[in-house]
Length: 339
Image (cartoon, rainbow, N blue to C red; front, side, top):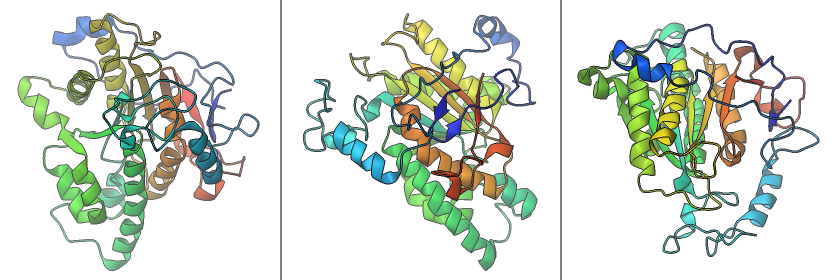
């Protein structure tokens, strides 16, 4: 079975990722949706996964190993990729080069969900009984949230080193900055650097009725806008990475990337194609599961970006690993499923 670092595919491939059905499209778009495959991604061959994974141990590289590989792979002086004549635009500085060879940051669009992906919404509302218009967290809870905020902030910063980052939520406009300021205030400087938008507030007034359609339209517009000025060049692969807890963003990413390729008259399997990589996490996680997901993202996102095929991974709730297990304990792996 393939592995993403310590993410080992030991799950049956024919088991459903989520019991929640994908929302049916409205009649206005039903015919177009029917023409698209419900299962876009390919089965990944055994052993065919990113080079940053230890072939024998099936684990993510340690920080020391990553640093050594990074020094081998990329020159921070002239932005030229080691072992390749391909480089980013010559008039740009080294900041546009990702921390691995052969990829420019502009080639990668990373789209996060907000609720129960970054913000621990279920924990706050269900377990703590808090509201955005209610009392502030007490001192004990504030310490817990501040510690989590540092971890989630590190996730966003790590993603920003690898590509262009966006946050797309189905909550209404204003929810994201309000909840961030109230519950995760230390993240505000980072969040304010990232483009974030309400898919619902933008597209519900335009006649799109379902949560899935709001996300799909938001993804379509984000992809078209970002990659309009990012040409497909030899030796470089463009990709979209979706990270969220809902089937909505998963299917939105699949449909939007597929449509982008069709409109561009290219195939995702060709070097010019736009790759779609979806990481679907557990729905309505508690704070501990969400914390572990942040560690997983930080540990393996580089490999996901670098992988040169479509990906469709589902992280099952019972398979989250603890921080101490990320680099060693083989008995507690987070195991994704390929559709």
